[in-house]
Image (cartoon, rainbow, N blue to C red; front, side, top):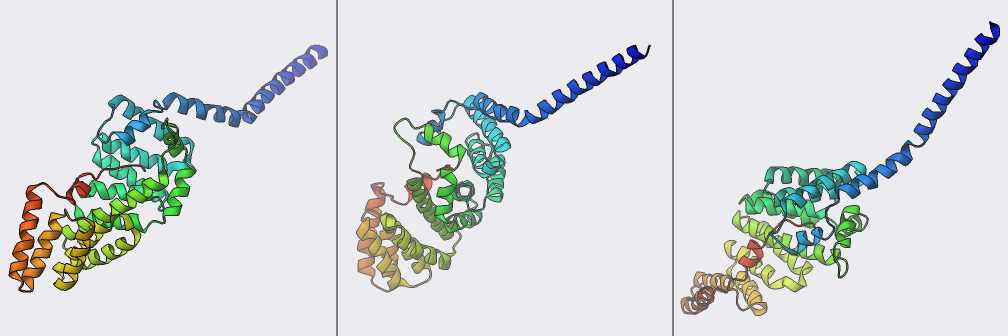
Length: 305
Protein backbone atom coordinates (compact mmCIF):
# COMPACT_ATOMS: atom_id res chain seq x y z
CA UNK A 1 0.00 0.00 0.00
CA UNK A 2 2.82 2.37 0.93
CA UNK A 3 4.73 1.56 -2.23
CA UNK A 4 1.69 2.32 -4.38
CA UNK A 5 1.26 5.65 -2.59
CA UNK A 6 4.93 6.61 -3.15
CA UNK A 7 4.70 5.56 -6.79
CA UNK A 8 1.64 7.81 -7.27
CA UNK A 9 3.43 10.77 -5.67
CA UNK A 10 6.54 10.27 -7.80
CA UNK A 11 4.44 9.97 -10.97
CA UNK A 12 2.62 13.21 -10.17
CA UNK A 13 5.89 15.01 -9.39
CA UNK A 14 7.43 13.89 -12.66
CA UNK A 15 4.36 15.13 -14.51
CA UNK A 16 4.52 18.50 -12.73
CA UNK A 17 8.24 18.85 -13.47
CA UNK A 18 7.54 18.08 -17.11
CA UNK A 19 4.80 20.72 -17.27
CA UNK A 20 7.06 23.29 -15.59
CA UNK A 21 9.87 22.47 -17.99
CA UNK A 22 7.61 22.91 -21.02
CA UNK A 23 6.27 26.20 -19.68
CA UNK A 24 9.77 27.48 -18.99
CA UNK A 25 10.95 26.45 -22.44
CA UNK A 26 7.97 28.22 -23.94
CA UNK A 27 8.75 31.42 -22.05
CA UNK A 28 12.42 31.31 -22.97
CA UNK A 29 11.56 30.72 -26.60
CA UNK A 30 8.91 33.47 -26.74
CA UNK A 31 11.28 36.20 -27.88
CA UNK A 32 12.65 33.94 -30.59
CA UNK A 33 9.10 33.12 -31.63
CA UNK A 34 8.23 36.83 -31.76
CA UNK A 35 11.34 37.58 -33.80
CA UNK A 36 10.31 34.94 -36.31
CA UNK A 37 6.75 36.26 -36.39
CA UNK A 38 7.77 39.82 -37.30
CA UNK A 39 9.48 39.04 -40.62
CA UNK A 40 6.84 36.44 -41.47
CA UNK A 41 4.01 38.93 -40.91
CA UNK A 42 5.73 41.75 -42.76
CA UNK A 43 6.70 39.42 -45.60
CA UNK A 44 3.09 38.36 -45.97
CA UNK A 45 1.88 41.98 -46.03
CA UNK A 46 4.63 43.57 -48.13
CA UNK A 47 3.27 44.82 -51.47
CA UNK A 48 5.30 44.16 -54.63
CA UNK A 49 8.49 46.09 -53.99
CA UNK A 50 8.48 47.80 -57.38
CA UNK A 51 5.13 49.37 -56.51
CA UNK A 52 6.96 51.95 -54.43
CA UNK A 53 8.42 53.13 -57.73
CA UNK A 54 4.88 53.64 -58.99
CA UNK A 55 4.24 55.92 -56.01
CA UNK A 56 7.12 58.16 -56.93
CA UNK A 57 7.24 58.07 -60.70
CA UNK A 58 3.52 58.31 -61.50
CA UNK A 59 1.84 61.23 -59.79
CA UNK A 60 -1.77 60.12 -60.12
CA UNK A 61 -1.39 56.38 -60.56
CA UNK A 62 -2.41 53.80 -58.01
CA UNK A 63 -3.90 50.33 -57.79
CA UNK A 64 -6.60 50.20 -55.11
CA UNK A 65 -5.81 46.65 -54.03
CA UNK A 66 -2.06 47.20 -53.77
CA UNK A 67 -2.48 50.58 -52.09
CA UNK A 68 -4.70 48.93 -49.45
CA UNK A 69 -1.93 46.35 -48.93
CA UNK A 70 0.52 49.22 -48.48
CA UNK A 71 -1.68 50.63 -45.73
CA UNK A 72 -1.82 47.26 -43.93
CA UNK A 73 1.93 46.82 -44.35
CA UNK A 74 2.81 50.17 -42.80
CA UNK A 75 0.39 49.61 -39.96
CA UNK A 76 2.33 46.39 -39.26
CA UNK A 77 5.65 48.26 -39.44
CA UNK A 78 4.28 50.79 -36.95
CA UNK A 79 3.25 47.93 -34.63
CA UNK A 80 6.44 45.87 -34.80
CA UNK A 81 8.89 48.80 -35.09
CA UNK A 82 7.50 51.56 -32.83
CA UNK A 83 10.78 53.49 -33.11
CA UNK A 84 9.88 54.03 -36.79
CA UNK A 85 6.33 55.10 -36.10
CA UNK A 86 6.77 58.55 -37.66
CA UNK A 87 7.89 57.22 -41.05
CA UNK A 88 5.15 54.57 -41.12
CA UNK A 89 2.52 57.18 -40.28
CA UNK A 90 3.95 59.43 -42.97
CA UNK A 91 3.48 56.68 -45.53
CA UNK A 92 -0.05 56.02 -44.25
CA UNK A 93 -0.84 59.71 -44.73
CA UNK A 94 0.46 59.46 -48.29
CA UNK A 95 -1.63 56.35 -49.04
CA UNK A 96 -4.81 57.83 -47.56
CA UNK A 97 -4.35 61.02 -49.57
CA UNK A 98 -3.98 59.01 -52.78
CA UNK A 99 -7.22 57.24 -51.93
CA UNK A 100 -8.98 60.60 -51.45
CA UNK A 101 -9.35 60.08 -47.69
CA UNK A 102 -8.27 63.58 -46.72
CA UNK A 103 -9.31 63.52 -43.05
CA UNK A 104 -7.47 60.24 -42.42
CA UNK A 105 -4.44 61.56 -44.26
CA UNK A 106 -4.38 64.74 -42.16
CA UNK A 107 -4.72 62.70 -38.96
CA UNK A 108 -1.88 60.37 -39.95
CA UNK A 109 0.44 63.28 -40.80
CA UNK A 110 -0.41 65.03 -37.53
CA UNK A 111 0.43 61.83 -35.62
CA UNK A 112 3.69 61.53 -37.56
CA UNK A 113 4.66 65.03 -36.41
CA UNK A 114 3.79 64.13 -32.81
CA UNK A 115 5.95 60.99 -33.10
CA UNK A 116 8.93 62.90 -34.51
CA UNK A 117 8.75 66.72 -34.71
CA UNK A 118 12.00 66.81 -36.75
CA UNK A 119 10.47 64.96 -39.73
CA UNK A 120 10.17 67.41 -42.66
CA UNK A 121 7.71 65.65 -44.96
CA UNK A 122 4.55 65.53 -42.78
CA UNK A 123 4.68 69.33 -42.37
CA UNK A 124 5.18 69.76 -46.11
CA UNK A 125 2.36 67.38 -46.98
CA UNK A 126 -0.12 69.00 -44.59
CA UNK A 127 0.78 72.32 -46.20
CA UNK A 128 0.06 70.87 -49.64
CA UNK A 129 -3.30 69.42 -48.56
CA UNK A 130 -4.48 72.69 -47.04
CA UNK A 131 -3.09 74.69 -49.98
CA UNK A 132 -5.07 72.59 -52.45
CA UNK A 133 -8.16 73.06 -50.28
CA UNK A 134 -7.72 76.84 -50.45
CA UNK A 135 -6.98 77.11 -46.72
CA UNK A 136 -3.95 79.31 -47.27
CA UNK A 137 -3.41 80.45 -43.67
CA UNK A 138 -3.15 76.84 -42.48
CA UNK A 139 -1.01 75.97 -45.48
CA UNK A 140 1.38 78.84 -44.73
CA UNK A 141 1.69 77.71 -41.11
CA UNK A 142 2.73 74.18 -42.07
CA UNK A 143 5.05 75.29 -44.90
CA UNK A 144 6.76 77.65 -42.47
CA UNK A 145 7.22 74.83 -39.96
CA UNK A 146 8.55 72.62 -42.77
CA UNK A 147 11.34 75.01 -43.76
CA UNK A 148 12.21 75.49 -40.07
CA UNK A 149 13.11 71.78 -39.76
CA UNK A 150 16.83 71.00 -39.65
CA UNK A 151 17.53 69.11 -42.94
CA UNK A 152 20.25 66.91 -41.40
CA UNK A 153 17.79 65.43 -38.90
CA UNK A 154 15.42 64.35 -41.67
CA UNK A 155 18.28 62.85 -43.70
CA UNK A 156 19.45 60.81 -40.70
CA UNK A 157 15.87 59.67 -40.08
CA UNK A 158 15.44 58.50 -43.68
CA UNK A 159 18.83 56.77 -43.77
CA UNK A 160 17.95 54.60 -40.74
CA UNK A 161 14.36 53.88 -41.67
CA UNK A 162 13.00 50.50 -42.76
CA UNK A 163 10.19 52.30 -44.58
CA UNK A 164 12.66 54.26 -46.68
CA UNK A 165 14.95 51.28 -47.16
CA UNK A 166 11.97 49.55 -48.78
CA UNK A 167 11.73 52.47 -51.18
CA UNK A 168 15.44 52.26 -51.93
CA UNK A 169 15.06 48.61 -52.91
CA UNK A 170 12.27 49.47 -55.34
CA UNK A 171 14.51 51.38 -57.72
CA UNK A 172 16.12 48.98 -60.16
CA UNK A 173 18.66 51.45 -61.52
CA UNK A 174 19.96 52.63 -58.15
CA UNK A 175 18.72 54.18 -54.89
CA UNK A 176 16.71 57.35 -54.74
CA UNK A 177 18.63 60.49 -53.82
CA UNK A 178 16.94 61.54 -50.57
CA UNK A 179 19.18 64.57 -50.19
CA UNK A 180 18.21 65.90 -53.63
CA UNK A 181 14.55 65.12 -52.87
CA UNK A 182 14.69 67.05 -49.61
CA UNK A 183 16.34 70.02 -51.30
CA UNK A 184 13.61 70.02 -53.94
CA UNK A 185 10.93 69.69 -51.26
CA UNK A 186 12.31 72.63 -49.29
CA UNK A 187 12.33 74.80 -52.44
CA UNK A 188 8.72 73.84 -53.16
CA UNK A 189 7.79 74.58 -49.55
CA UNK A 190 9.30 78.07 -49.88
CA UNK A 191 7.43 78.75 -53.12
CA UNK A 192 4.08 77.49 -51.83
CA UNK A 193 4.61 79.40 -48.58
CA UNK A 194 5.25 82.63 -50.49
CA UNK A 195 2.17 82.11 -52.64
CA UNK A 196 0.06 81.35 -49.56
CA UNK A 197 1.30 84.53 -47.89
CA UNK A 198 0.52 86.56 -51.02
CA UNK A 199 -3.00 85.10 -51.14
CA UNK A 200 -3.56 86.07 -47.50
CA UNK A 201 -2.07 89.55 -48.07
CA UNK A 202 0.67 88.97 -45.49
CA UNK A 203 3.20 91.03 -47.42
CA UNK A 204 5.60 91.85 -44.61
CA UNK A 205 6.22 88.17 -43.87
CA UNK A 206 6.27 87.44 -47.61
CA UNK A 207 9.12 89.92 -48.01
CA UNK A 208 11.12 88.33 -45.20
CA UNK A 209 10.62 84.79 -46.52
CA UNK A 210 11.54 85.81 -50.08
CA UNK A 211 14.81 87.39 -48.92
CA UNK A 212 15.72 84.27 -46.90
CA UNK A 213 14.78 82.10 -49.87
CA UNK A 214 17.08 84.02 -52.22
CA UNK A 215 20.02 83.09 -49.98
CA UNK A 216 19.04 79.42 -49.60
CA UNK A 217 17.94 78.69 -53.18
CA UNK A 218 20.53 79.96 -55.67
CA UNK A 219 19.09 77.77 -58.45
CA UNK A 220 15.58 79.25 -58.25
CA UNK A 221 16.33 82.89 -57.52
CA UNK A 222 14.05 84.28 -60.22
CA UNK A 223 10.84 83.24 -58.45
CA UNK A 224 12.12 84.54 -55.10
CA UNK A 225 13.02 87.90 -56.65
CA UNK A 226 9.51 87.98 -58.12
CA UNK A 227 7.78 87.44 -54.78
CA UNK A 228 10.09 89.97 -53.10
CA UNK A 229 9.10 92.47 -55.78
CA UNK A 230 5.42 91.64 -55.31
CA UNK A 231 5.67 92.13 -51.54
CA UNK A 232 7.50 95.45 -51.96
CA UNK A 233 4.86 96.64 -54.43
CA UNK A 234 2.00 96.06 -52.00
CA UNK A 235 4.05 97.73 -49.26
CA UNK A 236 4.23 100.72 -51.67
CA UNK A 237 8.02 100.54 -51.97
CA UNK A 238 7.84 100.94 -55.74
CA UNK A 239 11.53 101.54 -56.44
CA UNK A 240 12.56 98.50 -54.42
CA UNK A 241 9.81 96.49 -56.08
CA UNK A 242 11.00 97.48 -59.55
CA UNK A 243 14.58 96.48 -58.70
CA UNK A 244 13.59 93.00 -57.58
CA UNK A 245 11.17 92.48 -60.47
CA UNK A 246 13.86 93.49 -62.96
CA UNK A 247 16.28 91.07 -61.26
CA UNK A 248 13.65 88.35 -61.62
CA UNK A 249 13.25 89.10 -65.33
CA UNK A 250 16.99 88.92 -65.91
CA UNK A 251 16.88 85.29 -64.84
CA UNK A 252 13.50 84.56 -66.43
CA UNK A 253 12.41 87.00 -69.17
CA UNK A 254 9.18 85.05 -69.78
CA UNK A 255 7.49 85.86 -66.46
CA UNK A 256 4.38 87.75 -67.55
CA UNK A 257 3.36 88.45 -63.94
CA UNK A 258 6.71 90.12 -63.24
CA UNK A 259 6.19 92.41 -66.25
CA UNK A 260 2.66 93.19 -65.04
CA UNK A 261 3.80 94.30 -61.58
CA UNK A 262 6.76 96.16 -63.07
CA UNK A 263 4.31 98.06 -65.27
CA UNK A 264 2.22 98.97 -62.22
CA UNK A 265 5.35 100.16 -60.40
CA UNK A 266 6.15 102.63 -63.18
CA UNK A 267 2.52 103.70 -63.36
CA UNK A 268 2.53 104.37 -59.60
CA UNK A 269 5.49 106.75 -59.95
CA UNK A 270 3.99 108.58 -62.94
CA UNK A 271 5.96 107.00 -65.80
CA UNK A 272 2.89 106.19 -67.88
CA UNK A 273 4.58 105.68 -71.28
CA UNK A 274 7.06 103.15 -69.91
CA UNK A 275 4.32 101.46 -67.93
CA UNK A 276 2.22 100.99 -71.10
CA UNK A 277 5.17 99.58 -73.03
CA UNK A 278 5.93 97.02 -70.31
CA UNK A 279 2.24 96.16 -69.98
CA UNK A 280 2.19 95.23 -73.68
CA UNK A 281 5.00 92.75 -73.04
CA UNK A 282 3.09 91.28 -70.12
CA UNK A 283 -0.04 90.91 -72.25
CA UNK A 284 1.87 89.31 -75.14
CA UNK A 285 3.55 86.77 -72.87
CA UNK A 286 0.24 86.00 -71.22
CA UNK A 287 -1.40 85.40 -74.61
CA UNK A 288 1.46 83.03 -75.50
CA UNK A 289 0.73 81.05 -72.35
CA UNK A 290 4.06 81.99 -70.82
CA UNK A 291 3.04 81.60 -67.18
CA UNK A 292 6.16 80.63 -65.23
CA UNK A 293 4.63 80.80 -61.75
CA UNK A 294 1.49 78.69 -62.17
CA UNK A 295 3.30 75.39 -62.99
CA UNK A 296 5.00 75.48 -59.58
CA UNK A 297 1.65 75.92 -57.86
CA UNK A 298 -0.50 73.47 -59.81
CA UNK A 299 2.14 70.73 -59.53
CA UNK A 300 1.96 70.73 -55.72
CA UNK A 301 1.31 67.19 -54.44
CA UNK A 302 1.96 65.13 -51.35
CA UNK A 303 5.18 63.14 -51.44
CA UNK A 304 7.32 61.09 -49.10
CA UNK A 305 10.69 62.24 -50.44
